[in-house]
Amino acid sequence: MANNHNNYKTVYAFAREMHPKTEKFDVQYGTAGFRAKANTLGYVMYRMGLLAVLRARYKKACIGAMITASHNPEPDNGVKLIDPCGEMLEQSWEAWATKFANVADDRLEEVITEIVTELGIEMTQRVEILVGKDTRPSSPSLAKALCDGVLALSGKPIDYGIVTTPQLHYFVYCRNSRNQYGFPTEEYYYRKLCDAFKKIRGKNFNTNNYQSKLYYDGANGVGAKKIKYFQECLGDSLMIDRFNDELIGTGKLNYMCGADYVKTKQAFPNGVPKEVGQRCCSVDGDADRLMYYYLDENEKCHLLDGDRIAILIAEYLKGLVEDTGFDVNLGLVQTAYANGASTEYITNTLNIPVSFVCTGVKYLHHEAQKYDIGVYFEANGHGTVIFKKEFKEKLQTSYDDPTVSVEVKRAIKKLQTVIDLINETVGDALSDMLLVETILHSKGWSIQDWEKTYTDLPNRLMKVSVKDRNTITTTNAERTCLKPEGLQKEIDMIVKKYKSGRSFVRPSGTEDLVRVYAEAASKDEADQLALEVALKVHEMAEGIGPEPKL
Image (cartoon, rainbow, N blue to C red):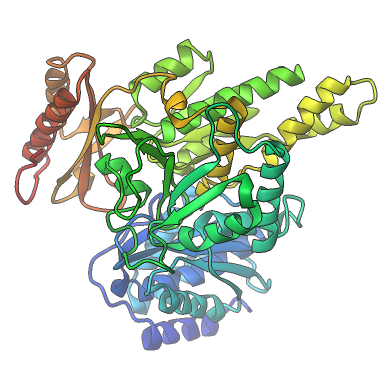
């Protein structure tokens, strides 16, 4: 498309006629992209279609656009753009996304001209935008609006239909790597992961305390649809009983089920049989978060969250690397939500370095790239492992070296197969699930054995509704509150009253909420600490609605 005002006016006229800006409030592009009530997002989708084409032309690569609201309730929806290597949208472009979404209809032409001129975008290049969506009823119409935006700037939308968010990240990277990372099809995605899983597992499906039976909660979403392909491919090597399946169940997306529900409520999801000792896992609405749990004899739910998953993976990879004899810089990345006991175990028992970053996968992913092998997980179960290109090349060079021993080559091949099992582009609940099952099988561990590695400090997460979440600002990887002035001092005074106490507050990335995290020596103390801090936030940050209660 030629770079001229007449074409931009056509874009503006189409926007005014078919996708006019209907909302007076502003929206902000954050870690999760845009999220809001689905019926308010039509014009936002159209404009993100425009921006996706501009981003693709700027990068001279295909870009992804995923329509999802992840763990949010079914009436919500959202969109996030995916950069060429399958990573989150570059942070500097988040401001452009926010500007595009909020500008008045009659200034849309002006903003397009501004970004094209400022960044020197060549507008004649034909580009592809890969589009995916989750199972929400609103997703098809919003996808249509987004594709209208892509077509308005002469881009080519390629609709992948209903896919998990991690699958679309994977497809974008495969397409831009010219199939060096893999082929951008669902069939290849399933085959790659399943072949690696079965190759490592071998023919002995049950080992010591490990049993291959797993209960799987699909959150009544896309993860419920896609797990069927793994069931068919894996067969008896992993017996997956699925629940909260939108095809055979009646539950609503994410309602009283899914990874976020299990994590925040620390309770069993509806629809999953409460069978004592049975290993269970949950994914969220777009299948990028994973949570493990089981029920004990006293009907208590034991949660094994992202911290536990990260440590299990890091320790396993450390052992595999040691078997190769390589000197590798392996590290683990956490956020302030990581349980203090997990950090102590990683550093003092496993002797693996830990880095802390702000909440949000984009921050963890970037930090993990600094290591030869970077393991990152948020406590909510969202994470993966990144391997530097140079490290993978080193593995292959050593494997091809005729002077390297058979034992070392065997260790290298196993590590390479594990790498094939991992979706490095972004946290992928299905890939992570297969990796966890691989490690437990390798160790011969039950889920109870896994839990025994260390003891979590009891913790509590609360939400406080506020007039404006931007009144809260933080530093030190969100562990220290800067504003409102004096709030951090009050939090410190409250924390001192509790044994092993720790608490921090941070603004939500998507809602006018402040999240309060607390941990202490006992559950009652953690609950009380969280409540005291939440009440102080309500008082000092212009809380709205009723005061927080346990």
